[in-house]
Image (cartoon, rainbow, N blue to C red; front, side):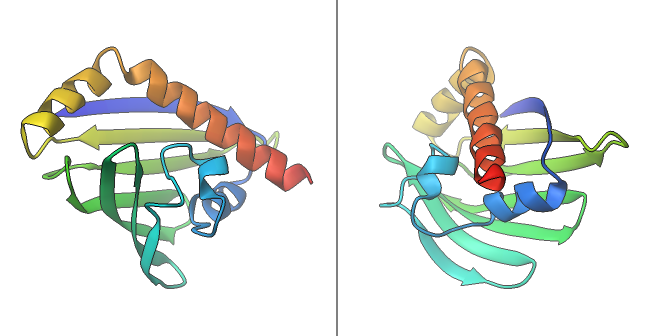
Length: 148
């Protein structure tokens, strides 16, 4: 099992980032590169939670999104072709008086088969930089969307 911690400071409010994170419409891949439109299926979406399948490149996972806490969003993996156990993502938001927000993300990758365990090891070691870049790109894309 791999646990990856990511951090980004942004001019976005937590509400703006959560709006981007929970936008499951077409073009989601422009905000989140690992969420290709061809994989995207919204099974249910309520006011503070959703059940969504997403992925790309042959990797998919079904996630339960919970954004009922304004300072935290929890994505729990409920099914996947690679991930199981404790897999998921947790986003924590810290507002600052200067208008910026710290976003701290914890990604847990618990492989449920040999391929998942191998990929989890790679992601937790040399692949962390790829996740950092993807996270920074998503923050930038949501910032741009909110400036328009």
